[in-house]
Length: 333
Image (cartoon, rainbow, N blue to C red; front, top):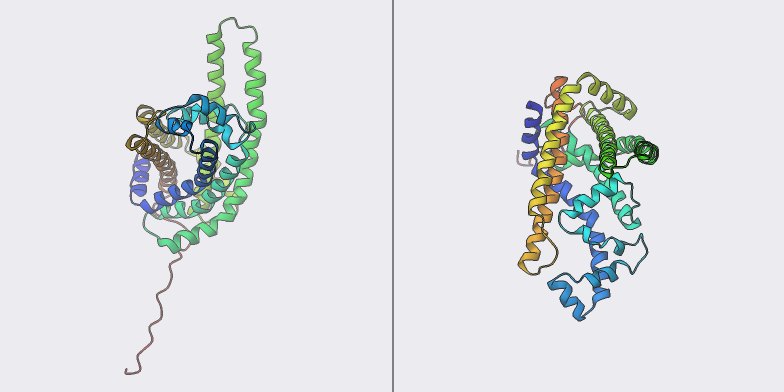
């Protein structure tokens, strides 16, 4: 419990880190939002349908707009599933069912992953030290660990590719089909599919956990070999399975609480004026809460590792702090 609460303390004490992560997320989404807004403006113009779409839900226009491009165009993503809590359910379903990604979204996602890899070194360094490191220290750490994390990201990408290409195929196209082939009750088939989702989700969570601890060991111990950091992360998880699982479970509960609150307060379709802006604010608060949970995961994992190896508040890399300007004696002295 102590590492988890220490992670909370470190995140609360680092509002600049939260702001940096939110800014990166906003920058990744802004081009997509701008492109979608421009496409909607060109399609609606100054028509009566525009007024109706602004005041309420014009389903006929919605269907027409979404179908005007190809299946993988950005406008094809403008469906009822983007409204409120349905967005969360659709995103989860897209991941677990391995749906194709629209190229524009894939490009934005690639930018977000690279930006996240860059700032993650600074984030982990700030969290590990437990005190302010300043903008110079933050970006120095980000630059130091970016290419190391990029190498680790290649390995992570290969593992995720194997999971989504072969493991997913085996679970859903082979095992699931074999166990449900002769079933006469649809509910039993549904339960088997839930089991497949649970297994695949557990594998994704375990993979993410291993690479998180590899990054943490890389930053705290200033490791240059990411393969060595990855092996060290696996050893740490194997030696402390109960404590690692406990911290992960607390973070999972926190994530579920955030999702449950969002399910209750998520806005619906339609509305204008103040109600529209309240919906936008509620959506941004949910995104911010999700990012805080993500940071809390990293902070509590870092605290657990440091506590286990007596590295509390320690990071091996020297802190990059600019030297004060030299003071020259005056001519009078």
